[in-house]
Length: 469
Image (cartoon, rainbow, N blue to C red; front, top):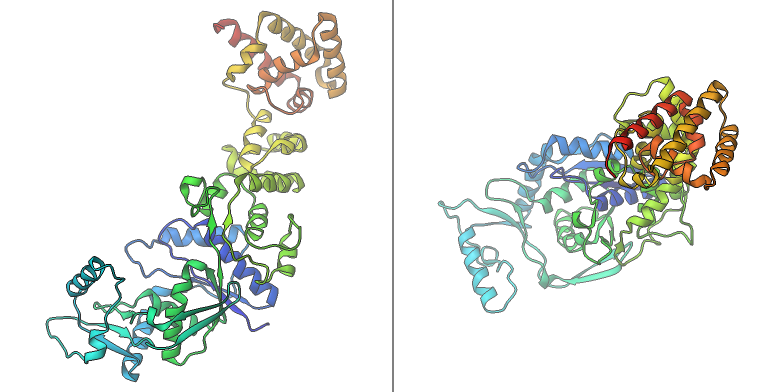
């Protein structure tokens, strides 16, 4: 199937929806699996809402996910003359006609039909009567849709779907201002780009039947279609911002790895046996459309977090730090980089996202400037006195400090004081990190050094000595 040519055609009218990213991924995987080509088209004909910033954001997200395209992206707005040319050709061949009905006339007919309990569609007045030129009205160009019979789409995902032509209207191809409609532009562009397979959301299924009418009128080869069910939120409603992150940019900002997001999206509506962890290479090898489900998928943020945690744990520490750096809010010198890398194995065991990882890694680069409220539980006069004793132990260890020797000395001190090691460890954790959840305090001290550890403990003691509790 080396002749396969598919496309992803987003509109740059807003942030790229995560459902659109899955559509891009399925197209890309299908092309790569078949040895075909994946093309990109920017559908920017909505001039009021399309922006260069949104277009660049689309490119950025696809590059971040390593979804690459094989030819220069097509910009739909640059092809308007070609779209108009096709509309005029259809007019000339008798497959389209001028419609002089005004918007006011159409609105009135629609209102009357709906009040009578009917479903409105254009009544083909100008087609049936051969309505003559009206000098006071700029006409639209409408397609002469087939009136009788049926069309069946052999959908690669949904199976055979049939529609009666009586349900189709004579759609507008060219507006009265000369601008082409979405329906015409999409068909012309897909034809000219040599698209063989159109894989898109099932909300386009009705459009497919209307677009097939244009293909037939132009006497063009009709591509194969595959319509992917939409993504829903946990409540069964279409996924939106109220469910959390809906745009692809959000997932970058929240600290998800591209490998984890792709793994999650490829399994969202597609399956390969019981496999859950699927690499990019495996996805390319295994992907086909026969295993795409026919029902909507439900987005499960907890499942995505678990996958992200897996990929964080599996990633090499150097590579992980490269992903983290934009989230740290500081420039890493060699000393800070080295400290984070030394502590990375423990840090990544607890992290669900890169943001989590970046925040927790600050224990190696920054002294606490505030303390979580629960730290006060481990800042009584007894705890502060024990922390002073810890400072003495740290000073005695100096540059020869090791996790093992420090832990043994503090364990002996706890036994002598008649308290559990965990009490001193929690007080130390509060002093070193400003919170009560972290990797081993002995590992932290070994990484930041006894002088920095002593400074943080002394700051903690000063803070709680003057802060009412």
